[in-house]
Image (cartoon, rainbow, N blue to C red; front, side):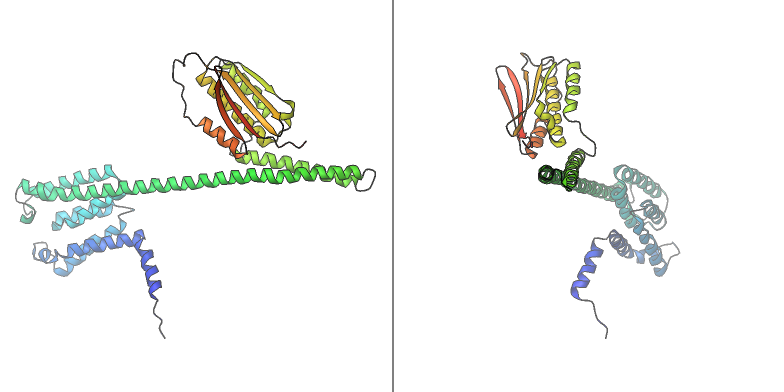
Length: 379
Protein backbone atom coordinates (compact mmCIF):
# COMPACT_ATOMS: atom_id res chain seq x y z
CA UNK A 1 0.00 0.00 0.00
CA UNK A 2 1.36 3.42 -0.99
CA UNK A 3 2.10 5.58 2.03
CA UNK A 4 1.72 9.31 1.63
CA UNK A 5 4.15 11.60 3.44
CA UNK A 6 2.87 13.08 6.65
CA UNK A 7 1.99 16.74 7.00
CA UNK A 8 4.99 17.36 9.26
CA UNK A 9 7.34 15.76 6.71
CA UNK A 10 5.92 17.92 3.94
CA UNK A 11 6.29 20.98 6.15
CA UNK A 12 9.95 20.20 6.87
CA UNK A 13 10.58 19.74 3.16
CA UNK A 14 8.92 23.07 2.38
CA UNK A 15 10.93 24.80 5.11
CA UNK A 16 14.19 23.45 3.70
CA UNK A 17 13.30 24.65 0.22
CA UNK A 18 12.12 28.01 1.52
CA UNK A 19 15.60 28.88 2.82
CA UNK A 20 17.50 27.27 -0.05
CA UNK A 21 19.19 29.82 -2.39
CA UNK A 22 18.67 27.50 -5.35
CA UNK A 23 14.96 27.28 -4.60
CA UNK A 24 14.71 31.07 -4.42
CA UNK A 25 16.46 31.34 -7.78
CA UNK A 26 14.02 28.89 -9.32
CA UNK A 27 11.08 30.85 -7.91
CA UNK A 28 12.58 34.06 -9.30
CA UNK A 29 12.95 32.51 -12.75
CA UNK A 30 9.37 31.21 -12.67
CA UNK A 31 8.10 34.62 -11.56
CA UNK A 32 9.89 36.36 -14.43
CA UNK A 33 8.58 33.78 -16.90
CA UNK A 34 5.04 34.16 -15.57
CA UNK A 35 5.15 37.91 -16.11
CA UNK A 36 6.65 37.60 -19.59
CA UNK A 37 4.07 35.02 -20.66
CA UNK A 38 1.49 37.79 -20.46
CA UNK A 39 3.22 39.40 -23.46
CA UNK A 40 3.14 36.24 -25.62
CA UNK A 41 -0.02 37.18 -27.58
CA UNK A 42 1.49 40.51 -28.56
CA UNK A 43 4.82 38.91 -29.45
CA UNK A 44 3.09 36.36 -31.67
CA UNK A 45 1.30 39.15 -33.59
CA UNK A 46 4.45 41.23 -34.00
CA UNK A 47 6.70 40.94 -37.01
CA UNK A 48 9.33 38.73 -35.41
CA UNK A 49 8.64 35.32 -37.01
CA UNK A 50 7.51 33.89 -33.67
CA UNK A 51 4.36 31.98 -32.94
CA UNK A 52 2.72 31.64 -29.55
CA UNK A 53 4.62 28.40 -28.88
CA UNK A 54 8.02 29.59 -30.06
CA UNK A 55 7.66 32.89 -28.21
CA UNK A 56 6.85 30.99 -25.02
CA UNK A 57 9.93 28.77 -25.47
CA UNK A 58 12.19 31.76 -26.09
CA UNK A 59 10.93 33.55 -22.99
CA UNK A 60 11.24 30.36 -20.93
CA UNK A 61 14.86 29.95 -22.04
CA UNK A 62 15.58 33.56 -21.16
CA UNK A 63 13.95 33.31 -17.73
CA UNK A 64 15.84 30.08 -17.03
CA UNK A 65 19.14 32.00 -17.04
CA UNK A 66 18.03 33.67 -13.79
CA UNK A 67 18.96 30.44 -12.05
CA UNK A 68 22.57 31.63 -12.57
CA UNK A 69 21.95 35.05 -11.07
CA UNK A 70 24.09 34.38 -7.96
CA UNK A 71 27.14 32.85 -9.62
CA UNK A 72 27.00 34.60 -12.99
CA UNK A 73 24.52 37.51 -12.94
CA UNK A 74 25.96 38.87 -16.19
CA UNK A 75 24.42 35.96 -18.11
CA UNK A 76 20.76 36.91 -17.46
CA UNK A 77 21.72 40.56 -17.95
CA UNK A 78 23.11 39.97 -21.45
CA UNK A 79 20.11 37.77 -22.27
CA UNK A 80 17.78 40.52 -21.03
CA UNK A 81 19.45 43.07 -23.31
CA UNK A 82 19.04 40.66 -26.22
CA UNK A 83 15.34 40.14 -25.47
CA UNK A 84 14.89 43.89 -25.18
CA UNK A 85 16.45 44.49 -28.59
CA UNK A 86 14.73 41.59 -30.34
CA UNK A 87 11.32 41.39 -28.72
CA UNK A 88 11.19 44.76 -26.92
CA UNK A 89 10.72 42.82 -23.66
CA UNK A 90 11.50 44.89 -20.55
CA UNK A 91 10.47 42.47 -17.80
CA UNK A 92 13.64 40.39 -17.91
CA UNK A 93 15.94 43.41 -17.58
CA UNK A 94 14.36 44.35 -14.26
CA UNK A 95 15.19 40.97 -12.74
CA UNK A 96 18.69 41.06 -14.24
CA UNK A 97 19.50 44.54 -12.87
CA UNK A 98 18.16 43.61 -9.46
CA UNK A 99 20.37 40.51 -9.45
CA UNK A 100 23.47 42.52 -10.36
CA UNK A 101 22.78 45.02 -7.58
CA UNK A 102 22.03 42.27 -5.08
CA UNK A 103 25.00 40.00 -5.73
CA UNK A 104 27.66 42.34 -7.17
CA UNK A 105 27.10 45.61 -5.34
CA UNK A 106 26.61 49.25 -6.16
CA UNK A 107 29.38 49.91 -8.70
CA UNK A 108 28.47 47.01 -10.93
CA UNK A 109 24.77 47.83 -10.71
CA UNK A 110 25.32 51.49 -11.59
CA UNK A 111 27.46 50.56 -14.59
CA UNK A 112 24.96 47.97 -15.77
CA UNK A 113 22.10 50.46 -15.41
CA UNK A 114 23.97 53.08 -17.42
CA UNK A 115 24.64 50.53 -20.17
CA UNK A 116 20.97 49.49 -20.15
CA UNK A 117 19.84 53.12 -20.51
CA UNK A 118 22.31 53.66 -23.39
CA UNK A 119 21.16 50.51 -25.20
CA UNK A 120 17.50 51.35 -24.63
CA UNK A 121 18.02 54.87 -25.93
CA UNK A 122 19.72 53.50 -29.02
CA UNK A 123 16.76 51.23 -29.61
CA UNK A 124 14.43 54.16 -29.05
CA UNK A 125 16.13 56.04 -31.88
CA UNK A 126 15.78 53.11 -34.29
CA UNK A 127 12.57 52.62 -36.32
CA UNK A 128 10.16 50.05 -34.99
CA UNK A 129 10.30 50.92 -31.30
CA UNK A 130 6.87 50.02 -29.90
CA UNK A 131 4.51 52.93 -29.36
CA UNK A 132 3.64 51.63 -25.88
CA UNK A 133 7.24 52.32 -24.81
CA UNK A 134 6.97 55.98 -25.73
CA UNK A 135 6.79 58.07 -28.88
CA UNK A 136 8.79 60.96 -27.47
CA UNK A 137 11.95 61.31 -25.44
CA UNK A 138 9.89 62.45 -22.48
CA UNK A 139 7.84 59.26 -22.61
CA UNK A 140 11.04 57.22 -22.84
CA UNK A 141 12.62 58.90 -19.84
CA UNK A 142 9.49 58.55 -17.74
CA UNK A 143 8.99 54.85 -18.48
CA UNK A 144 12.09 52.96 -19.60
CA UNK A 145 14.71 54.67 -17.43
CA UNK A 146 12.87 54.36 -14.07
CA UNK A 147 12.37 50.64 -14.69
CA UNK A 148 16.12 50.00 -14.64
CA UNK A 149 17.01 52.54 -11.97
CA UNK A 150 14.38 51.23 -9.55
CA UNK A 151 15.32 47.59 -10.06
CA UNK A 152 19.03 48.30 -9.58
CA UNK A 153 18.36 50.49 -6.54
CA UNK A 154 16.34 47.79 -4.83
CA UNK A 155 19.10 45.28 -5.57
CA UNK A 156 21.75 47.59 -4.10
CA UNK A 157 19.65 48.05 -0.96
CA UNK A 158 19.28 44.28 -0.63
CA UNK A 159 23.05 43.90 -1.09
CA UNK A 160 23.74 46.30 1.76
CA UNK A 161 21.18 44.51 3.91
CA UNK A 162 22.99 41.23 3.24
CA UNK A 163 26.31 42.84 4.20
CA UNK A 164 24.86 44.09 7.48
CA UNK A 165 23.54 40.63 8.29
CA UNK A 166 26.89 39.07 7.41
CA UNK A 167 28.72 41.54 9.68
CA UNK A 168 26.30 40.84 12.51
CA UNK A 169 26.79 37.11 12.06
CA UNK A 170 30.58 37.58 12.15
CA UNK A 171 30.28 39.73 15.25
CA UNK A 172 28.17 37.10 16.99
CA UNK A 173 30.62 34.40 15.97
CA UNK A 174 33.57 36.44 17.22
CA UNK A 175 31.75 37.10 20.50
CA UNK A 176 31.02 33.39 20.86
CA UNK A 177 34.68 32.51 20.22
CA UNK A 178 35.77 35.14 22.74
CA UNK A 179 33.36 33.74 25.32
CA UNK A 180 34.68 30.23 24.72
CA UNK A 181 38.26 31.47 25.03
CA UNK A 182 37.52 33.29 28.26
CA UNK A 183 35.76 30.21 29.61
CA UNK A 184 38.76 28.07 28.74
CA UNK A 185 41.09 30.49 30.49
CA UNK A 186 38.86 30.51 33.56
CA UNK A 187 38.69 26.71 33.54
CA UNK A 188 42.47 26.61 33.23
CA UNK A 189 42.86 28.88 36.24
CA UNK A 190 40.42 26.78 38.23
CA UNK A 191 42.33 23.66 37.27
CA UNK A 192 45.56 25.34 38.32
CA UNK A 193 44.21 26.40 41.71
CA UNK A 194 42.37 23.17 42.53
CA UNK A 195 44.55 20.47 40.96
CA UNK A 196 47.71 22.38 41.79
CA UNK A 197 46.77 22.42 45.45
CA UNK A 198 46.14 18.69 45.46
CA UNK A 199 49.48 18.05 43.74
CA UNK A 200 51.21 20.18 46.37
CA UNK A 201 49.50 18.24 49.15
CA UNK A 202 50.49 15.00 47.45
CA UNK A 203 54.12 16.10 47.21
CA UNK A 204 54.24 17.17 50.86
CA UNK A 205 52.54 13.99 51.98
CA UNK A 206 54.98 11.88 49.99
CA UNK A 207 57.91 13.74 51.52
CA UNK A 208 56.56 13.10 55.02
CA UNK A 209 56.13 9.41 54.26
CA UNK A 210 59.66 9.29 52.82
CA UNK A 211 61.02 10.73 56.08
CA UNK A 212 59.05 8.24 58.12
CA UNK A 213 60.23 5.37 55.91
CA UNK A 214 63.87 6.39 56.13
CA UNK A 215 66.06 3.30 55.97
CA UNK A 216 63.18 1.14 54.74
CA UNK A 217 62.62 -0.34 51.30
CA UNK A 218 59.82 2.13 50.36
CA UNK A 219 61.76 5.32 51.11
CA UNK A 220 62.99 5.67 47.52
CA UNK A 221 59.47 5.06 46.19
CA UNK A 222 58.04 7.87 48.32
CA UNK A 223 60.84 10.23 47.26
CA UNK A 224 60.16 9.44 43.58
CA UNK A 225 56.44 10.05 44.17
CA UNK A 226 57.18 13.46 45.69
CA UNK A 227 59.44 14.39 42.75
CA UNK A 228 56.76 13.29 40.28
CA UNK A 229 54.12 15.43 42.01
CA UNK A 230 56.40 18.46 41.96
CA UNK A 231 57.17 17.99 38.25
CA UNK A 232 53.47 17.59 37.48
CA UNK A 233 52.71 20.82 39.38
CA UNK A 234 55.43 22.66 37.46
CA UNK A 235 54.15 21.36 34.12
CA UNK A 236 50.62 22.37 35.07
CA UNK A 237 51.76 25.91 35.91
CA UNK A 238 53.65 26.31 32.67
CA UNK A 239 50.81 24.90 30.59
CA UNK A 240 48.15 27.14 32.15
CA UNK A 241 50.29 30.26 31.73
CA UNK A 242 51.07 29.41 28.12
CA UNK A 243 47.40 28.71 27.30
CA UNK A 244 46.16 31.83 29.07
CA UNK A 245 48.45 34.07 27.05
CA UNK A 246 47.74 32.82 23.55
CA UNK A 247 50.28 30.01 23.39
CA UNK A 248 53.34 32.10 24.25
CA UNK A 249 55.21 31.84 27.51
CA UNK A 250 55.01 35.04 29.52
CA UNK A 251 57.91 36.30 31.60
CA UNK A 252 57.57 36.41 35.36
CA UNK A 253 59.54 38.18 38.09
CA UNK A 254 62.81 37.80 36.18
CA UNK A 255 61.40 40.16 33.54
CA UNK A 256 60.75 43.03 35.98
CA UNK A 257 64.36 44.25 35.71
CA UNK A 258 63.97 44.59 31.95
CA UNK A 259 60.74 46.55 32.45
CA UNK A 260 62.52 48.88 34.86
CA UNK A 261 65.40 49.38 32.43
CA UNK A 262 62.99 50.13 29.60
CA UNK A 263 61.14 52.65 31.76
CA UNK A 264 64.41 54.36 32.67
CA UNK A 265 65.29 54.63 28.98
CA UNK A 266 61.95 56.42 28.55
CA UNK A 267 63.05 58.94 31.22
CA UNK A 268 61.27 57.53 34.29
CA UNK A 269 63.69 55.98 36.84
CA UNK A 270 62.33 52.96 38.67
CA UNK A 271 63.02 51.82 42.22
CA UNK A 272 62.31 48.09 42.19
CA UNK A 273 62.03 46.02 45.38
CA UNK A 274 61.05 42.35 45.20
CA UNK A 275 60.74 40.31 48.38
CA UNK A 276 62.66 37.05 48.48
CA UNK A 277 59.48 35.16 49.36
CA UNK A 278 57.79 36.38 46.17
CA UNK A 279 60.27 34.43 44.06
CA UNK A 280 58.54 31.22 45.14
CA UNK A 281 55.28 32.27 43.49
CA UNK A 282 53.74 30.03 40.86
CA UNK A 283 54.32 30.96 37.18
CA UNK A 284 50.67 31.98 36.86
CA UNK A 285 50.98 34.53 39.69
CA UNK A 286 54.34 35.73 38.43
CA UNK A 287 52.69 36.39 35.08
CA UNK A 288 50.02 38.47 36.82
CA UNK A 289 52.73 40.48 38.62
CA UNK A 290 54.59 41.08 35.36
CA UNK A 291 51.46 42.26 33.54
CA UNK A 292 50.35 44.59 36.35
CA UNK A 293 53.80 46.18 36.70
CA UNK A 294 54.11 46.50 32.91
CA UNK A 295 50.80 48.33 32.63
CA UNK A 296 51.56 50.59 35.59
CA UNK A 297 54.95 51.61 34.20
CA UNK A 298 53.37 52.31 30.83
CA UNK A 299 50.73 54.51 32.43
CA UNK A 300 53.37 56.34 34.46
CA UNK A 301 55.38 57.07 31.31
CA UNK A 302 52.23 58.43 29.65
CA UNK A 303 50.81 60.57 32.44
CA UNK A 304 53.90 61.42 34.53
CA UNK A 305 56.87 61.36 32.17
CA UNK A 306 60.28 61.91 33.72
CA UNK A 307 59.13 61.27 37.31
CA UNK A 308 60.45 58.39 39.43
CA UNK A 309 58.38 55.24 39.99
CA UNK A 310 58.54 52.98 43.02
CA UNK A 311 57.60 49.29 42.59
CA UNK A 312 57.25 46.97 45.58
CA UNK A 313 56.47 43.25 45.36
CA UNK A 314 56.15 41.47 48.70
CA UNK A 315 54.17 38.86 50.57
CA UNK A 316 51.99 40.03 53.45
CA UNK A 317 50.56 37.07 55.35
CA UNK A 318 48.67 34.90 52.84
CA UNK A 319 48.51 37.69 50.27
CA UNK A 320 50.77 38.85 47.51
CA UNK A 321 50.97 42.65 47.37
CA UNK A 322 51.92 44.65 44.30
CA UNK A 323 52.33 48.40 44.80
CA UNK A 324 53.37 50.89 42.13
CA UNK A 325 53.50 54.58 43.06
CA UNK A 326 54.71 57.70 41.29
CA UNK A 327 54.47 61.46 41.93
CA UNK A 328 51.79 63.40 40.11
CA UNK A 329 53.11 66.02 37.68
CA UNK A 330 52.51 69.62 38.62
CA UNK A 331 51.34 70.31 35.10
CA UNK A 332 49.79 67.90 32.62
CA UNK A 333 51.97 66.72 29.72
CA UNK A 334 52.26 69.07 26.75
CA UNK A 335 50.57 66.49 24.59
CA UNK A 336 47.60 64.48 25.77
CA UNK A 337 48.72 60.86 26.22
CA UNK A 338 47.44 58.29 23.76
CA UNK A 339 45.30 55.95 25.81
CA UNK A 340 42.38 53.62 25.19
CA UNK A 341 41.31 53.71 28.84
CA UNK A 342 41.19 49.91 29.07
CA UNK A 343 44.52 49.22 30.78
CA UNK A 344 43.26 49.69 34.32
CA UNK A 345 40.16 47.64 33.57
CA UNK A 346 42.30 44.84 32.13
CA UNK A 347 44.55 44.82 35.21
CA UNK A 348 41.55 44.77 37.55
CA UNK A 349 39.96 41.87 35.65
CA UNK A 350 43.19 39.88 35.66
CA UNK A 351 43.67 40.34 39.42
CA UNK A 352 39.98 39.66 40.15
CA UNK A 353 40.10 36.43 38.11
CA UNK A 354 42.69 35.15 40.59
CA UNK A 355 40.65 36.10 43.64
CA UNK A 356 42.31 39.44 44.30
CA UNK A 357 41.52 43.14 44.30
CA UNK A 358 43.07 46.20 42.69
CA UNK A 359 42.71 49.75 43.98
CA UNK A 360 44.02 53.14 42.94
CA UNK A 361 44.74 56.06 45.28
CA UNK A 362 45.82 59.70 45.11
CA UNK A 363 47.46 61.07 48.24
CA UNK A 364 50.23 63.52 49.12
CA UNK A 365 50.75 64.40 45.48
CA UNK A 366 51.30 60.80 44.38
CA UNK A 367 49.32 58.26 42.41
CA UNK A 368 49.39 54.63 43.43
CA UNK A 369 48.11 51.27 42.24
CA UNK A 370 47.89 48.45 44.75
CA UNK A 371 46.91 44.88 43.90
CA UNK A 372 46.40 42.10 46.41
CA UNK A 373 45.77 38.47 45.55
CA UNK A 374 46.28 35.13 47.25
CA UNK A 375 49.98 34.23 47.20
CA UNK A 376 49.29 30.50 47.08
CA UNK A 377 52.38 29.75 49.19
CA UNK A 378 52.26 26.86 51.64
CA UNK A 379 54.20 27.71 54.78
